[in-house]
Structure formats: structure tokens, C-alpha cells
Length: 208
Image 1 (tube, rainbow, N blue to C red):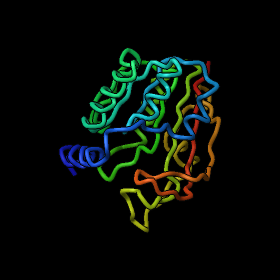
Image 2: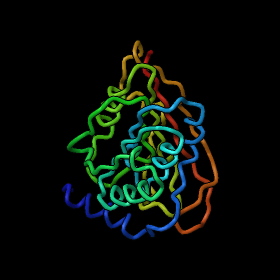
Image 3: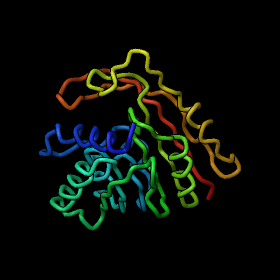
Image 4: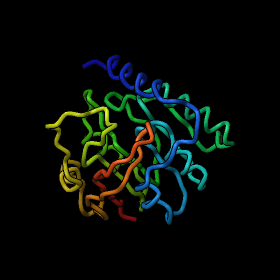
């Protein structure tokens, strides 16, 4: 499938969602990051921008990336309206073809899933390599299919956090897996419905 198809698909996903309102941060980001000192963060697959806005309000300097220009442009507008335009840079990137430059204290990849070609393992390996000493890579994946998910394939398989970590294959002398577990929670969908979902959580820390 072509890059054009992927851009069209994700632009359509975000254009179909209302632009108004305040997007919520992901619960597991809040849990993992609240006690960390702010620095530079890369938000991979920023989507509606809830994570980026939450991070910026807590002093982080955010580079937010999405394949959808609709998502990136909306986040730029939301950041400006919230007085956070100097803390959030939202840009369109197709991670299948390019990766944003820079060094980061945190890289957050929440639900970086797509029906289109993406070497996710390679993306996460590059993300880890862009960490500064003592920086963290936080990967939160779907571990179950929510009723509102765009992917309702009954045969879909969700790799465990341990499998994701093994695939990235980072040198244990440099990177430490701090967390690799499944977590269950009640989640709210875009339509206001609720369901219990499973998340797969992986946190990798670069040596100081």
C-alpha cells in the first residue's frame, strides 16, 4: 500500500473527528511521566494531541509527529489557542520514510499501529537511539481490540511488551527495560462509550 493511501486514510480518520473540545492525555502516559523532570519529548503519532498538550503544560518542550497533516495542523492551532505555541512543534512525518531530527529525554509512542506499511521495530530502534543519557522510550500498544477501534480483525495478534523489546534488540549494557507488562483499564471511546481494554506497556531507559 502506498504512502498516498496511508495519508489519505489517516487524514480521513482525523477529519471525521470533531476538532472542538480538549483532547485527553493517555492515562498510561500520565502515570509514567508525572514524576519525571520536564525536558525535550518526541510524541510519535500525536493524533488528537492530548498527550502533547498535557506534556507542554507541565513544562516539556514537545515535538509532535503524525502522518496526518490534519492532526498536525489541528494540534498547532490548539497549542496556539492554549498559549503553548512556543512549547509544541507539530509536524507531519511518514515514519516509513523519515524520522524527525533531534535528541530527547523522552520518546512517547502510544498506539503506533497502522494498516499500512511501517517497520515499527526500526522506528522504535531509531527512537531509542535518539534518547539522551537517562532518557526513556515509552511504548504503549493495544493488547485488545476496543469496540471503537479502526481494526476489528478478529484474528489480529498483539505482540507482548517482551516481544517488542526483543525485536528492538537494544544493547543491555546501554538500555534497561524498566517496565514490560500488560495493564487493564476502563477506556472511553471517541463516541463516549466505555469498555475494558488491555494495554501493553514497555519502558526502556538509556544509561546515564
